[in-house]
Image (cartoon, rainbow, N blue to C red; front, top):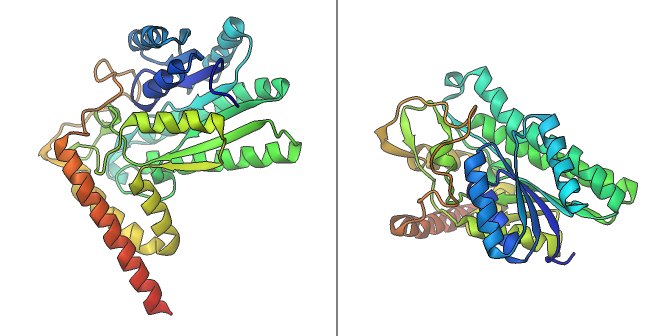
Length: 323
């Protein structure tokens, strides 16, 4: 599919990957319907996209509300007449030991991160079937393949997103709907405000775990998937390394991830318990970047690459030993 003159819906468009993706499609002159809970931030993104050459409308939406997502699709059709691309991206997260996160917290993460994608697919796919074409992009995560501690609900949700995407691809294959594609994106740690927005019950301040990659890199990947659809694509060298290593030595990677997350995903300073943006939109940090990809993070990125190489070497040694 071409990457110009498309009608694109992006959820979670007020910050992070969603905002960067809106900009990327606007740069190609595409028409946008942008969804998020934060109305003021969403209006800012609309203005930014218009200035970049992409007509855009704001549709305040809580993706956990099925009716609200159906209205998002209807508003898009009323304004533009079709839906060529739908990007499921809205997500929330909660950090905490398993027993310290309430059932309500678990349920909210799954309602947004899983059911929000279900609602998006149910709104988009009937339109795409009628048109005979379309691309549905589901933004998952590398933790949808490799688990990590302290974010149980988020990790579960990202595994579920991969499962949903795969099942939808199979259904479309059986139907013979060759003009409709479902693509899954698996980013590594991305420099977005999700770590400031997340609920946190660990007692420690959260930070982005290095290596950290820019959200624009994910946005470019999503645009390229419209041009050349692929079933799954990882974003970031660390993501590629982890996916490869998890296939070779899953137990080793699981143990190393536990250590890395415990040591590198938190700061030394304490932090009060907070529900973050689980139940209401954030009033600050509504931007593309979270401020994590600094010079200090660049140094940590090099260290992370070295660690990935070390794990790869260990995996190769383990394979030789098994032989």
